[in-house]
Length: 207
Image (cartoon, rainbow, N blue to C red; front, top):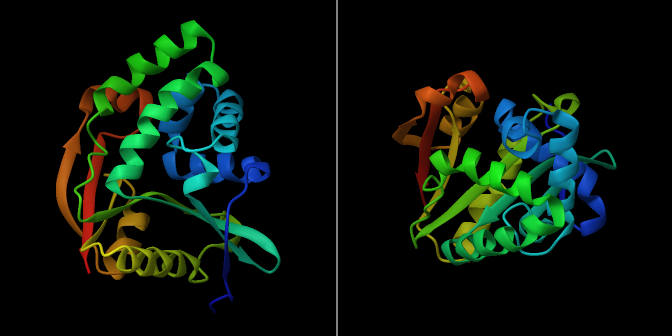
């Protein structure tokens, strides 16, 4: 059964849903990077980022899917220009989210991943896609991907692209079903014990 899904642009006041759904996409890595191992701290930090404009985790780049009157899933999209701008703004917003020592720690933890989200000019990049657990297996993930594809075509892009963890077989199966293929594997074996993943696969879908 496929639930009807409507879409709306996220607002700053929806930061609770934004933080929780982004963390669903990041798994253990989210707690490691944003909360320094503490899930509650990670959710609080991401909620602050989400409520601010134009950073990498902002509501400004977010669409929520809604089913049965509830927010069911999240989709965050970036073109190359938006991603570059968002990274600069994220640096500025760090001072509104973390203390100085935490900022230095965040930068240290992020350094191995700093070049992962280098988006070609002809791509629209899916930064995050997730559905709450009680809404899964009802076709909502595919509906979010359909929204992303329409937006990419509207922007004149030639490809959709994304990253997902090597170990995340369910997500990869969903993306393959929609026409994505793996084009690269990025390994971080030294990070495995901290984030629970040996690295990511880069996937793309020609349009």
